[in-house]
Image 1 (cartoon, rainbow, N blue to C red):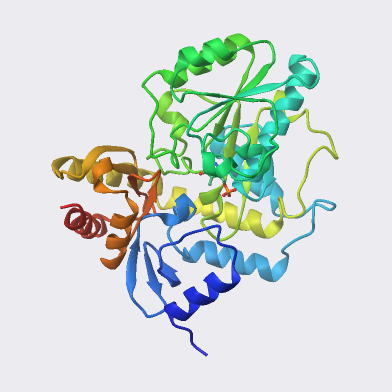
Image 2: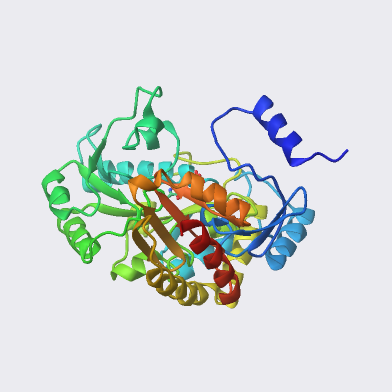
Length: 400
Ligand SMILES: *Cc1c(COP(=O)(O)O)cnc(C)c1O
């Protein structure tokens, strides 16, 4: 039996928890930058699953690696070793320049892992008094949805009804170096921050902020933890967003595009001094580091590099920005972006970005609003000029 989009939507609404409000497009198939709904209508994907499909939908080489590995071995748990994980370790440490890696599955789990790591390092290496460790975070952040992670969210809805929260976090204004300076005391073990706030509306910190933050962390022996789950792996036109800032973090968190949309794979990367505080039994995950995820992630990284997707993101990002800056619309307040990660912030009188995303969907372009007034543009990194021109036509039409 074949179901229509309408039938599938009503089934989903009837049976599922209502914790999402998706656009009413029921996607059945994807290839590269394009997806097709159940009725066969074609759409250009300008969200790329929040940067999880940077490599494009169903990349054939990643698919092949997945199928081949799935036929051989999928899961051993970490009770035993598997033959693929070390090769993934070799790949991701050499690309990132870190000496050690810890694999998990989802982004939020990797953030939780980094928090555990920072606290244990704080007690065992830095010598912070037990139970006192503090981690500095920033308003408007997004790091995931677990209880601990929402404990330091500034988004009312993310927290409402979910108390009590995990203590040990302090929220500061994003990009405000003197606020960080004032918040530092002997109990601060880490600063946890996104290099660009994606969910926050593509907010880019002031120039020099990260250099100063790096200096403050060095001076006060504080770990700088970068959540690059969405910003890394080419999105900003560099492999890692921290490269734009001329710094390196002490702890780096990756996820999303690490597996090109095929499978949840996340990692925490750090140097020996930090990662070696974890002893057998301290932390783990049944699926974390499984051979299927490892094989997929290896290939997802390979194609990103071999097919020069990072370079393409830089070039195409510049192309979109130039075109957008030539365009004038009474609805637009500001356009911000780095690489293929662009936010078009609309004026409040435009009445919210959602309805423009709905109109764009009718035009065959899939975008998602973020923070109510911002339309986020984040296509797969393999996008070509002609496809961008096609998308911009639709955007200009809808925002006219
Ligand atoms: C998506 C995201 C997360 C959470 O990842 P999940 O896989 O959804 O748990 C955390 N931090 C950032 C910056 C993200 O974009």
